[in-house]
Figure (cartoon, rainbow, N blue to C red):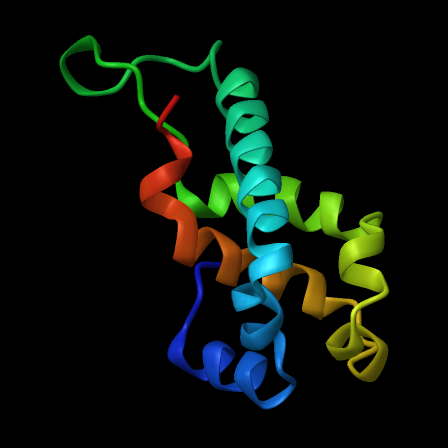
Length: 110
């Protein structure tokens, strides 16, 4: 599900927000989010049209699982200090939700 305030506090406590804001890494996270958005958009192309025949764009919770999967194999994420500290697998999804929350306005742009 989309980022909640409680999740954001947990991410901040483990320094994942600092990881997102790292100038060297921020472009990587944004690129990964754009790729996950495009992939999700492609998988939804055969879905029925929305109201008045409009194509429905992906929602945040549609994109997040694809981004979380990409993070699972990302060396940039897995070798980060916060990830070394926070071992549970749910951090992939929480960090994906954070990235999507912070980059959502950019994702549908060419």
